[in-house]
Image (spheres, rainbow over the protein chains, first blue to last red):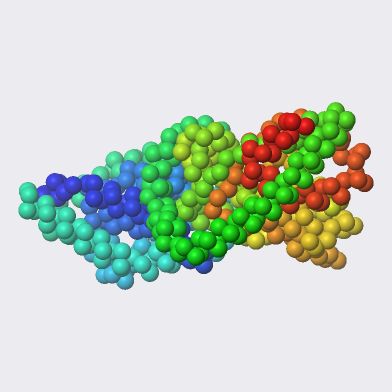
Length: 166
Length: 327
């Protein structure tokens, strides 16, 4: 498969960029609605290129988020590993879903991630975050189609370039 | 081509090894969390990881930094002149007050010498900048651009020109994470300046509000009272302004007053903070309750005038300790 030669670094760049985007300061009114960009990007790449990105990717990006957000080390890592595993397990089904169904799946995955983070916070004794934790799940799902369109374009460009050089 | 299913994809789908890997990675994450939360084993690892992620934070901070730089570079001459004039006026005013402070400090030190207690003054400070980098959106944490490289340490107090801002929770190499006093997890030992009533100010999770729980209903406390750090707890040096009481209410159903205070520092706008290295803090802290008894009636008078100036004492780091030493 020609995909074997596709370079990995642009994908890592998008993943790290998405993690950085989650620390970009927003106006106070909007912080509660900041989507989990890193999760969206991670789901996309695992779904599209499952042979190259998987559990390890999710874990590494989760660890990066833990460090950036000052959370308990391993909290986001665990949540994103679970999301990565489910995406990997069902990528063949998810990939051929129509867009609305795919968006619903992403919504469920984001909700699961938020729940795991919420649970760990509870076990670790951190104060609960209230409604803000759940509003960002909705924003994430709403923005998924747009994020996907952008990522599709990037992926097609990478694959085309690969076909040229292969 | 995109949706084709090459062998690698099917292997990913069927491979039972994936479940095992999943279990291993999950166990690893949980082990990390336990180690981080319970035993504090991972401080060094975290320091290294944070140092590795620092360039990313600088990158995220850069648009805001560029905006500030452009704002300064593009400032008009007339605005700069007005600003300069205003600054000169405040500087003059404050140095006038500072002269009085020097005399007061000397007097305070003499009195404390009579009581066999160590002098309080002489904190070392360093200016740090809060980076425009958001942390956990549900908590009030900030990143500052000074780390263990600059001798910052865990538990170090942060203040700004108006009052206490927070304390450092993680000293990384090039940066530090700090918790604001209004974070729901933060509690700060304070005293009411007017009555020397000691209590605790808890964060509420809202940037403009602290709450003072467990004050009995007959406590002498009123709206407008200034709260200063009491120095108990050993983290914040005593005498820095914290908040002004904004609401005192008695609910007939409860045993305690419900008291709220508004932080003195402008926590939502603050950009530059001062890191404090307490001079010789431990002995004073131990003696504080004892020394409090004797000068109680006379105290409100001098401390009242000294309190607004403690911010300036910090903004003139060189002058304050030097004067204290001469006396």
